[in-house]
Each structure stands twice: as structure tokens, then as C-alpha cells.
Image (cartoon, rainbow, N blue to C red):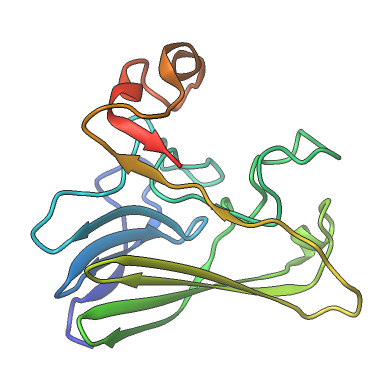
Length: 196
């Protein structure tokens, strides 16, 4: 891989200093935080950013980021059995490992890995698993999650990429009241984002 095409660094520009993988490929650029394997930026070469991030995101350990592409796993939204647990599952707050980075033509392919831990096994979803999240950065952004059950019994789970797109006019978003009620979302930021 070309030197500097993908590098892990601690983000000195934002509070918290979380580790982030920055990609500068021939066909596109991106940034992915190891916490949650959260894609916070993507732009095809020579084009404006495609993803929206809140200027009020905390970028702090154990706090979800608002915007980009949050990875939801093993549940989506609040967990019905225990709504005090993190919305969209524990994976978006977990520290993922960068397992692989390589070039494929003009694309940079990153593979992030998350496995069960004592903490996840003592949660509301106590299963043994291996999850590989592949992020392909090129003229298009490709996202793929593969989950493998390494336990003895069957498991069920939900997964999702909760994408926030940057748009010049507002199609769907939290609007004024919900934006004002979220502490990590600026009161007027709803005018520049879309959530799919």
C-alpha cells in the first residue's frame, strides 16, 4: 500500500483524542474512528464531503458520535428488554481493531474486527461472536458487516448503518424540537443534515 494511504492516529483536533484511521486514497478520502468503527467522513476525490457530522459531537470515550455512519449491532434503537442500555447496541461504543488495510485498484479496503468480551457476554446479548466490518474507500463508499456465531447455540441480532448525509436542503431530520432536546446536537444543525 502506498505510504500514508491509511494511517491510525490520535485525533488532536477534537476533544478526547480518540484513535482514528485516516484514509487518503486515489479515488476517495475517509476517516473512521476505532470507537464504534464509526465512519465520520467520506468524500470521493475532488468532491465535497458526503457525510454530515454534528459540530457538537463530543468525540469522547464511551460517548456515541452524532452523524457519519454509526454502526448498529446487535440491536437497533432502544433494546425493548432493557431501554437503559445503549441505543443501537454496544458495538457503536466498543473499541474495534483495525485487522487489515490494503489497496485494491484505486480503492483502500479497511477491515475492522470486534469479538465478544467478558463485558459483552454479561450484557443483555451474551453470545460469542466475531464481527468483521469492511469499509471500502474509493469513488464510492462500500460498507459490509459479517457476523460469525462462534458459540454453541443459535443467535439472532439486528444490524444497520444509520447514515447521516450532508445535504443543501433538509429532507428528513430531527427538526427544531428534537434537535433542541439532544445535548450533542446544535439547535440549528438540523438545517444541514439528513438521516437515512
